[in-house]
Image (tube, rainbow, N blue to C red; front, side, top):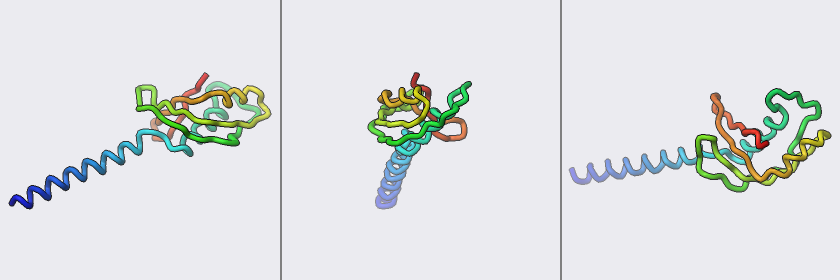
Length: 112
């Protein structure tokens, strides 16, 4: 009887630990998800038609803070390329807030 209770307790602890790891993994975007979200934001800003598409030449995720109501604030290094001179502003931003939309896809809040 004692052995059965011990096994049940161990199973409960393992289940909680493993589900916690899965939840933590979904708490912040991966580097590729951040890059995709940023690329979408640059090429599809709300209310604006982009005539010269923007591309990302280099993107490196650095760190993310704990999630808040605004999403997850993450820092990164980025280098963008475009014939549009205004796209160069993205080279100077050190980070942004990322959130999941209703479909579960990561999006970037406009940094400006």
